[in-house]
Every structure is written in structure tokens, then in C-alpha cells.
Length: 179
Ligand SMILES: [Fe+2]
View 1 (tube, rainbow, N blue to C red):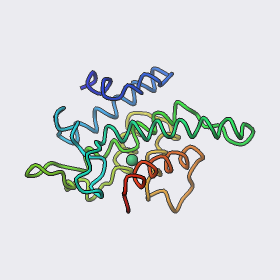
View 2: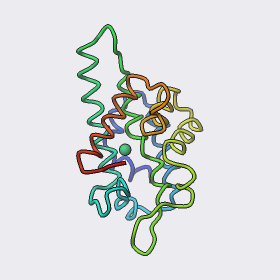
View 3: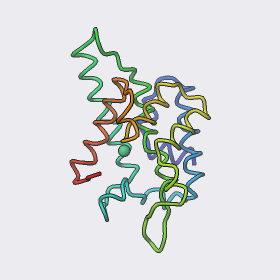
């Protein structure tokens, strides 16, 4: 599974800290284990159930959101060097893991992806944050995963989380997604 994930998420190679990279992969592996999906199914999991029949996979979405967030962070870090210093490694990991819990949030039923019983009770910001804590990822990353979606609307969002949240919604609403 490690090789499969490294191939599907080449951005893992951009994480400069090898320990952080290793922990990130361990979280991915455990999220995939929790989902019960095999490799072929993993590639077909859609990024959302709110756009019925979307051909965009969760893997492609995670990669696009990560890339969008990195570009946004590059701009704001450069534009406001005295005010904003987003840690690029942490943002990269947060991007790669923000929706990793979605694999366990969905299940395949009669050829269709639907919410799993687990997913109805534990949305991906919770499962992803729990797995990140379990594998020793830093608080900054746990915060990114836990606050990127609606769950983060009423509390504090770090500058990195603001970026990731908008990168995520850009890659949802621009495709016609509505909450
Ligand atoms: Fe997302």
C-alpha cells in the first residue's frame, strides 16, 4: 500500500522532513485500512457525494487542493512577510491529509458510493485529525485537518487553515458543489 500511495500522491516527495513524510504515509495507510477499499476501488472513490456522478476522484481532489493551497501560501507568505509565515511542510501534509478520512466516510454499495455507517457518525475532519494525533503529527497539522471544512467555521482558523479551507472550497464550488 505504501508504494501505491507514493505513486498516487507524488506530492509526498515534496515534504522536506523525512519523519513528517513517514508519519503522513502511516496516516494514509491507516485511513485506507479503515475504509476497507482495495487499490482499484480507492482510485474510483469520488471526492464528494454532493455532486452526484462527479467523475473527479478523491485522489485527484486531494492533489489539486494541496497544489492550490501551496500556491496561495506562496503568494501570501511573499506579500506579507512580516505578518504571515505559513509553514509549507505542514501545509503540504495538511493538504494531503485533509480529506484522507473520506475514504472511511464512504462505502461502495451496488456499484455506487454512499455514506458508510462510520462516516455518518464520524466525518473526515474528525477521523483525519484523530489519525494524525495517533501517528504523532504536530498540532498545526491536526488543526488543519480538523478545521478545513464546516467544522472549523465557528472557531479559530490559523492563516494556514484559512488558505486550506479556501483552496478546498475553490476545488468544490468551482465544480458546481453546494453545501
Ligand atoms: Fe476537500
